[in-house]
Amino acid sequence: MSDSEPEFTIGVEEEYLLTNGATRDLESDPPHDFMAECEKALESRVSPEFLRCQVEVGTPVCRSLREARSELSHLRRTIAEIAGRYDLVPLAVSTHPFAEWTRQRHTDKERYNALAQDMQVVAQRLLICGMHVHVALPDDGTRIDLMNQLTYFLPHLLALSTSSPFWQGRSSGLKSYRLSVFDELPRTGLPESFSSFDEYARTVGTLVDAGLIEDATKIWWDLRPSARFPTLEMRVTDVCSLIDDAMTIAALYLCLIRMLWRLRRNNQRWRNYSRFLVNENRWRAQRYGVSEGLVDFGKGALVPFADLIDEFVDLVRDDAVHFNCVAEVEHAREIVRRGTSADRQLAAYRAAIEAGAGESEALRQVIDLLAGEFLTGCAPA
Image (cartoon, rainbow, N blue to C red; front, side, top):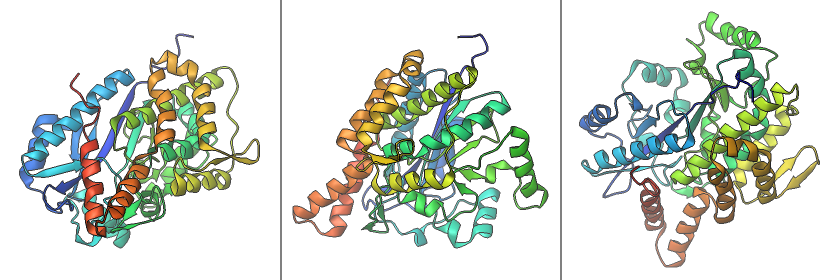
């Protein structure tokens, strides 16, 4: 490899829901001291989210997947420890199985107050959590070029992450209902395709000059050039209940970026497909997760997700070796075999109903499952 290869540093952000330890419902008004303790312990690695029942964490810039996992484990352990002092239980899940969005309160910060005023009920319904992964690409043109190509793979990553099958106390029939809620916002969904960074900057500048947005942080695409860092930020995925699954998503994304960078270095590229076609796979991932296939546009046919993942793993194997994350990448096969968080939640719910539990109790058992998974795999370094 040439000396010009980027370092491909990585950062992971996760959003959690805070539940009441006794009722399992969301804590719509957690004590002020909870967040104060979190900020004292974690400083800039933790922040409040739009709703008061949420908390966001972010790793520092990491030079390896191993470092990212260690940092994320520390963040989960610290949040859980502090939450326990207030009889709060954090969940790494993209929707709460039965909480009502109408009962939640948004955080009293200028940015969030403006969002609530601007978006009205669309913002009030944002009772959802996600996972974002940043990978550093210092060159502006490279970020835009790889964003155009990476769009094809977003449905694959989404399918592996799904954790939001319930909404307002009922099964939605979707594995990721989160996206249905998030897509009500403007400037969401698949990113546009741009011929250059300058074209991207002009497009954003049109909205800024018109006074519609302050900056590019108000563009919430599934994949975007970060407005704060020289990174390409993947935002399509649900938050994973298990840290093992989260690190697989991060590893696949990291390896994809390096694979596409290698193609670019060799004057090659991944074929670009229309947003219309990729959106069809995005919907299938949202609806079915890993239990059904996606369309292979080259073959013009539906392909079982297990076969797609085998191809995916082979595609990035050299990059997984380079980053020493072969185990994380190959864990994608295990996710397909035993299902995502959405599959486990639905299975727990059905098992409780079959055992004679009422719907409310069955949903509480789903919460208990999620609470137990929050620290699974988060052993101290």
